Length: 160
Image 1 (tube, rainbow, N blue to C red):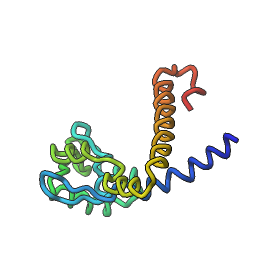
Image 2 (image 1 turned 90 degrees about the vertical axis):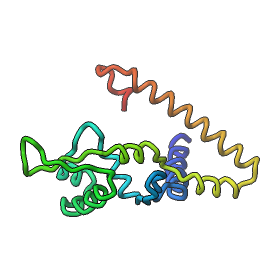
Image 3 (image 1 turned 180 degrees about the horizontal axis):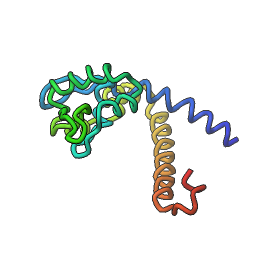
């Protein structure tokens, strides 16, 4: 029975996610529209800890020239800064600007308008049941995350 429920959740969740996921974000300050790929790059960068272009390309599964073009655009838009590495001038370090950090912080994985369209197409009683079920799943997830946070390294099987 549990295996059946696991399969149901694993099949249902991606359908909801793909129907309602954020495909782009418009920066409120500049009016610039960023694609999901550009947002993904920003998610992998930090304001204080530089990442080099080669590492970022590997993490995102693209070639360094492809990543370089994407970073050129994000730099031109003032979301990313490029600086030569002081220890190895062949490397380029990437960090977020204040504007890049703000965009990264304002991002959500679900598009509010798409979620509204999804929910508005449901009867109220059905919508209430669905949201109650999601709330129960969220509570279970929160408990699981809390347990993971307190698990000690010598008791790894609870953390998996």
